[in-house]
Image (cartoon, rainbow, N blue to C red; front, side):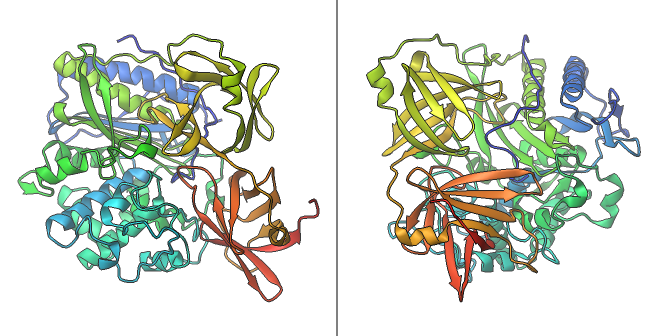
Length: 605
């Protein structure tokens, strides 16, 4: 195949907190002999091509270590490590090297909960309170139906994200996490929109505890990891795993990382594993739920997990989700397509990608020990499946153009003016206006000239990276969308950049809340430790700061009563309620489970 690849470290609009110079790299380190037949000669060229792509991608992205396993039905046809699991100790990465797999953990949590569905202990479409009597979440949507396990496993429950507990003296238990949700508010009505939520999967993990009668990590080991023979995998690092653990790399020093954050996210992202252990899971999936002679999941249950659950939900755009899995199609040169199911993961220091072509019984797992591999792991996974499919069947995946194949056009000024307004985006408030005949998006420190193209697209650049946008009205919302992505497994199709909002006069009573906030003295340190609430162009602007990450997140708020404000926009993290409290003379702001105290008033009005 003639396929282009670029492995550059791009700043993206959606970085890690998605749950969550390195020296010379060695070309690759073959591992211990695998307990399977020798690799098929069919895959010799596949291995050579992937090795070349991995080597070049690691060198360009300064990726210290990476491991990959390629599975054809019940055979591991290739498993290898590249670079180093520990650069300082010069310990090579192998197929047995352990990595944090991040959100790829979610498919294990979902699988274990679906086992309980099969046993009659969980009803997918019944209120979650029937499983978790102490689960309480405030709702501002009287029209919303109940939150169900299916909602949780498809990110359609409207569960707000929480980042609390990273620096508590111990890992927060799942019951403790439920308690922290009691005063929080539902961000959206159930089934209204796909809004990715790690906290929603934490609730699903608590449901597993209640259904199985066991603590979460023990339930996962007894019901899934143990029967699969995944002895080197766990949702907590166990003593026998430590010698094989990879050293992670990121913009943050590991010594400064929140010690309990990952384990506190448990069901959403704390699993550690190797590509060799993950191949056992892949083989079970490709065998319709069987591991050897043991049935861990019925074929019809597995197909339900891979069935699109959100068809007809307008605000989900092009996102297709099964039960936790993401669904897509690889177009083939014969005019047909190959169904692909996948899930990736990110922690502060690791990246992962699990992907399968179920009908062709092919699967791949790619793990890396650096946040710099955000694009590399899904790119290698997608290419591995495309190359393996061609080697096995002769079917060839269409090489996608890296950008839309459209030409510049001229659009009447009246059409451009209809798009003007203030948009709530992940980058902060963006004022779109026509300037000297050009449509321009003005952010705080950025001026994006939006050049019209065919098919209603606009092209601009963000820090040297082409960005394709479009404007639309969907389900009553005026939105600006980001189009497409490279690679496909990182994101495919349209996603929200922002929603047009109507500015309004800030009530006088809210001006007393403007100012600088921080975590109270003596309280545990938090993921976000300070915030600034200010008045923008007819909206409240909340800047959440993380000195730990060296990043600031900007949210636009609309007052809702005297003590609540709603995060404006659509998608992940939007629709959430920021609460304000008085305690004597002290004033507090509560967001994402984190409580901060007002330390100084805003002097500028």
